Image 1 (cartoon, rainbow, N blue to C red):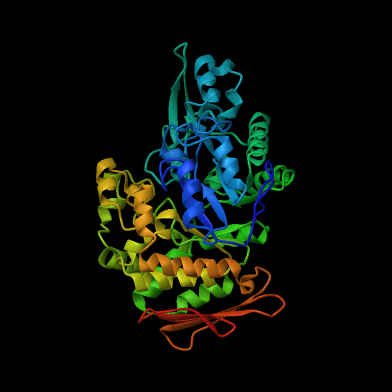
Image 2 (tube, rainbow, N blue to C red; image 1 turned 90 degrees about the vertical axis):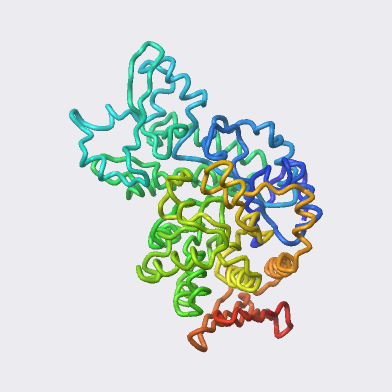
Length: 489
């Protein structure tokens, strides 16, 4: 299906590829060619990771949302992708680059700046003689120091501002009208360039409120989300709030009728494949909502905290330790400060290497994802069953780069001929075309034995039935549609 020029491709119940603009080839032109040549029918949507000018964090410190980084492509290239695939863009609602025109004007003009209210001044946020150490300890953070940065104005004056993630990313005050206008204009602009889904990156940090943890602050967070949804709805754009935390928070978001991420599935699936036991996986799939995007891998690490209480503490520890034993070239140091790891609750590895570069284990993991409730997202490295990139990791000393290989077009030509990749493509094409995966349909999960699981998907009209029968210990499985064999190992 191709859209007319200027139209948005609507969100479809088809697999979404997650990729940077320069990871499958050098730029969007190469990416478009790779999609057309190798991935037709394999994916129906593309999450195009941040492609705006940025000063850090692999695009997640955007300085200007109105233009495309010229090294990556152009708006014309983005819109061309949107003619054939539904597109998701990232909006870092919590922060913006310190090199943005807004923050630069603030640095120049200080407390008289036009954009002063866009930022959170620590002296204005806290009462006199605060923050105390108790205040700082209360803040939800994944680094040891206070999330504040001192700004020196052109006249020599100084103020501290909030920056949750790092020096390049200055937090925005989403309660102020000037920021609300910025949010509305950004969404409008994204919609005009073919976006059908916006990923709200780090949204749970966006509300800061005195004497709280400043993370997922209720009810204020719902007021923010609803305001943003009302704006996006004007342009027929959906939202996907991004959050890595306990699965119960995802459930709350789902209860408010937003799309969510299934960030628990990666760790639960690893536990199931390492242990050969089906009970935890079955229990999770039974309570998972249909209005979600499933993941096994993303541009970040494999989340641990997301599966807490779905797996016991002992099971989480077992899975983490098994990952370091079973995983190919996975070392604890890659998820430490030695490799600039910002999140102690994630393990840095490709999913294929987390399973020991084992084709059978990997293909079964993807079969589970295909049959899980929701729409599958597949990261570009995972789509090609990519191994850990130790060379890039060591060259950059950035832990997450172990899973951020830059593929040349000639590499891709070779990778797509591998048997595991061919079988994965077969699975994904099946997922995109079978009526049984209707999001309004039904899912039935059973565990005939401790090591086996059966998942049945059926459309609402009960006309098409697909089944996955798998043994988690031997890694054998069969996928059928109306008793017709689709894939077997």
